[in-house]
Image (cartoon, rainbow, N blue to C red):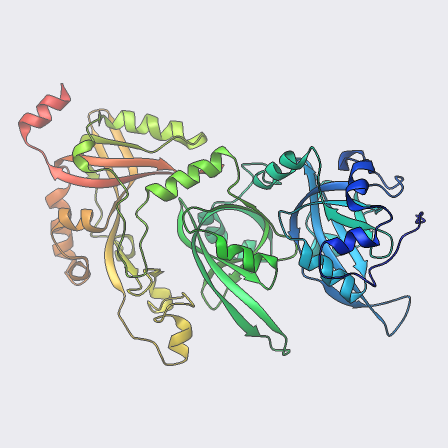
Length: 500
């Protein structure tokens, strides 16, 4: 497509916004008033030199490539994604000399609303490069911005508020994402794939200066994510605009819909991790039911700090007074299998019908790093895989490990029954299990099989007053959890009163 019109280039661009007014054919405000903005949905490769506007969803750092037309010379490019409606967003590539492209990159950031005039609309190429390195967009074309022919300014117009609201709308369907537990469970079968995640920021790590094997200096930042199914999942970011943006994210207050993040199996940590790359687009605090529910979950949970302490999450037991039968619990679990509903607290009078504490120890006890509280297993020699932990594998290799032994706690799956039925796969964990069993977790690991069997039959088929919390993860394939908050003996009078 031929370029038309008379334009100056970026050769004399200064480092302030007024420079754009000086080089334009008309004063900046006149350009904005007179330029007719074309919607992305109305664009096609036959449109000549259109003006488009929208919000910047993501932006790469400027890149230098060797010119094919003029061997021995360099050209610079800057890529970003522009969006003007929920279903319409497009890849934009700016071409030019080093000074002009870096100047644009410095002036405009992710979430800025911009207007581009006299751009080219070019059909997508299908050589595999775009699918591998660029964000996936619904458009059949890309937009090319030329340093010598195009203009870019901050948008001033009637659609400003509409464009700004788009930053809270995910680019994928609200329920099109993996829960973290499923990512970990699929392990190496997902390694190398780009998937979508919905998660809460649990921790923002420091920005670190890294020198690669080739001598290139870059920056790296690691975040910890969580959802209802996983308490900690690594997200790695390399040098990009997002490195600075994430520093403002508030742990437990920031929900992320992450489109096309790359997941891989980390042999060093023996777990799955995620990495943001040039295809990844973040939606911060998306305005969706799933995101609001996950936010509520994060603020209702017992989140452990680095020292292992935890904040109060659930209401006091004395405030939980609603009594249910087991059949009602089963009905509530079925209701939550297909649709998210708020957590429910209650009391049930029932007996333990499955309490296999004399079985496989790994199904009774859970080991945690005493430094960072991450779960450790026998497969890794109970060594922490958290690279930032002073007790982790990295420090073990460098011989600076503290050699602190892992802590051990109860994690038992039980079943409850009453005259109405049996509910399985209930979680009896931590201090609640220890108070019931009457033996410290670290001591339980050492007692004989006969003693464990005796403990089992001491409590099996005994009537209890069980306080519970039932909740569901917010994913499309969310799981329903019933966690025991307290398990007490019940006298005959109270039992008879509640069975009437």
